[in-house]
Image (cartoon, rainbow, N blue to C red; front, side, top):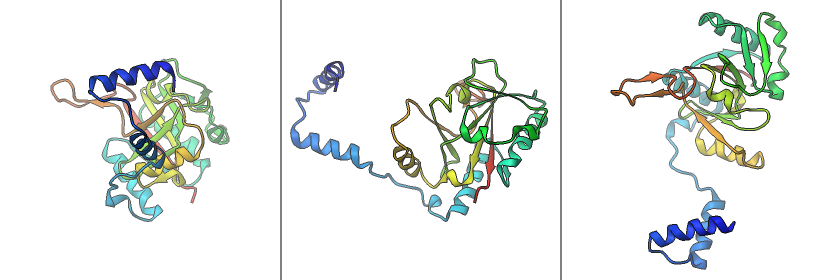
Length: 223
């Protein structure tokens, strides 16, 4: 632990009238941190995987996300193009430089103008992958990294997420287990449930307050 962090934590303990942490308490805390105990998991997520995928779709749509299911990655370009046409959006999309997304043949929809990389705030539509999705609340888990710029999750007004059905898990704890197993923790982990919204002003719900106004999920059935 750094000396700066030691100093900060020492001040916190002093303000709480606590002395140095004894060996027993330290061991207990370390065991809790390394053990990753699971919380109370809603019973609705305890079902077979196919039913978890259906639950994810149900919960995502309940919070104003839209979901389009396709049979294979070959259906993704048309699904993106149809979404743009439905909302009278231009053909320009800013895509994450993700290996799986790049493996899709985007020339199947030649009208799409695909560029890759982070967003500088001028892009109307972003297309990203996801690390996983949580069925119990219809939530997407995205993390930062060279292939998944966080700016694409928040700056464009329309966020399109391409998700494989095999990435859907039942509970948040399952998603965290997968992320830990993947290796070193990323700098940022974003849990996204529906489009951005706020009710700060007179308790009136406004979409797009702190991020995308629309969240569209293209769910690829990969068995």
